[in-house]
Amino acid sequence: MNLPRLFLHTSKEDRRQIFDAYLLAEKGFSGYDRRMTISCETAELDTDRLPADGLIDEAVDLLKGFADHTRFKILLLRHDEVCVHRLSEILEISQSAVSHQLRVLRAARLVNYKKRGRHVFYRLADDHVREMLTNVLSHSDEVHE
Image (tube, rainbow, N blue to C red; front, side, top):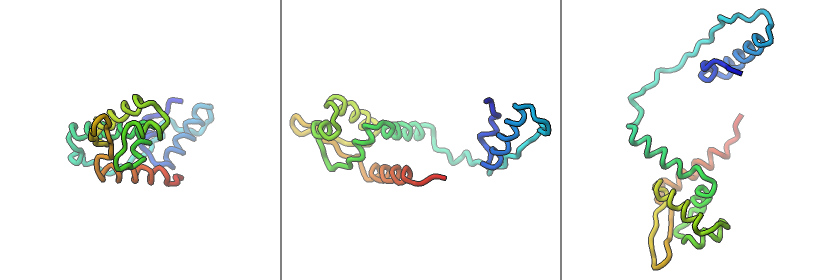
C-alpha cells in the first residue's frame, strides 16, 4: 500500500478517514473524491531551539550505548563497582563479550573504570546515567492506548 506522506503527519482521526477513503478508492467504490484534502495544521517549529550538530552527534552516540540487550543489562545492575569477571558470571557470557560491551559503554561515557592490579572495575559514570535508566524503564512500563 502506498499511502501519501501526509498520512504520517496528521491526527489519528484524519489518518482513519484517509485510510478508509484510500481503501474505498482502491476497491473502486464510487463517492470518493480524489481531490479530497486534509488540513495539516501544526504549530510553528522553532528551529533555533535545535542544538548544534556536534551535540546531537554526542547524544546519539550516548543513546547507542543503551541500544543493546547485554549493554542495557550491564547498566541496569547499577553496581557501585564490579569487575569484568563478576559481570561475566552474572550475565553468563564470556569475559571477552563483556569486555567488548564495556568498551562500547566507555566510548558512550556511560561507565567509568579503575584498574586494580590485574582487575578492571566498572561503575556507572554518574547520576545522570542512573536517572536515564530510571526514566527509560518508567517510560517502557507505561501503558499505552
